[in-house]
Length: 270
Image 1: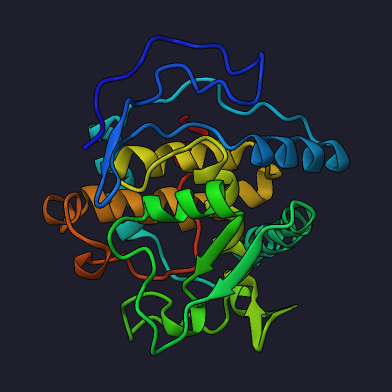
Image 2 (image 1 turned 180 degrees about the vertical axis):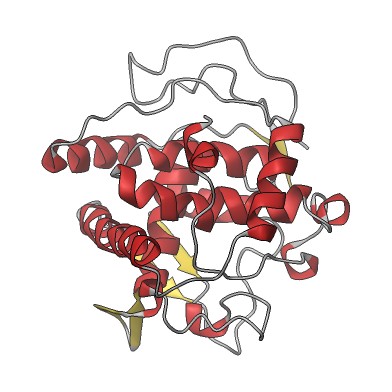
């Protein structure tokens, strides 16, 4: 449970300053009350990456509370969204998301982040709390990643095989040949969650979407919104939201892994 916000600081002055209105300490099992804030290396990596894109970079300066009514409407839009991986507009957005995620990953590699994939017979190193992932990056510059091959959506009726996110990335770590979605999981955690210290419950996820949105082109933002804000709104404010908002990862009912686009207001309503 996140405690009430701290007073407004100024994140523009240094890479250690938290977002205005950022949450106070959270309880991490086995570690007690801990204060999470930005990751300076990730803020620098984001700036360096954006300087090379030619796109304007306006990262969030404020931590936003979730508008529950809006989140409920987004959950409904995700529920209604059609799975259309071959639609030209959908495919263009997802291809842009894939290409830009791959480029962002190249910047992460420059930080020296060590990445390992969780084996099928291995316990989740972060099972006690996803905050352990953030601590691992902060303290060890290391991250365990759940591979796409071990889980990609929950609905067998949805054929996700045509998604650009399931294409071969060309990247290999150890013996693991990474799919684009493996790369996307890494860059979203790094730039969406770890960069600003955003958590993994409903409010943290929406702020992670907001943080990562600032690093994408408008076309890619549409696909990013479906993959993150859309799915997470469904998880937290959809038909299973009441239970999901306090469930462990293992007990969470996740959204269908659809490839589609929601109305533009979902992307534009920050």
